[in-house]
Image (cartoon, rainbow, N blue to C red; front, side):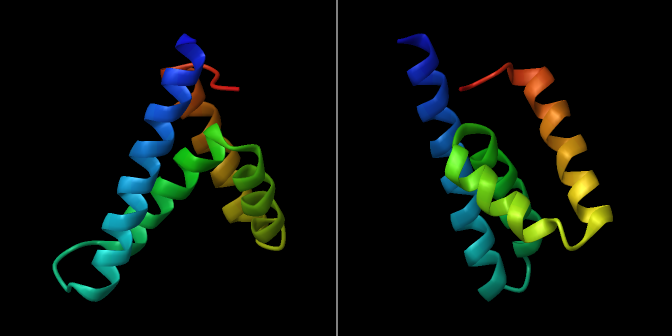
Length: 83
């Protein structure tokens, strides 16, 4: 039960960051790309499909892929495992 609450909270937070990122692409004073990146990383931590999609789309860019893995591991250390 507690794991489901944690997973739901992370998904909601990720969706809020993604929405802020989409708004940031339209509004000039909000950093859209940064919010999208944070939202996608949070979503990939809590969703297996999002993780697979993100890893499949970053493997052709090794530096970005390595950075993604580093960020995911740091966030997982802070908030703990979700799945």
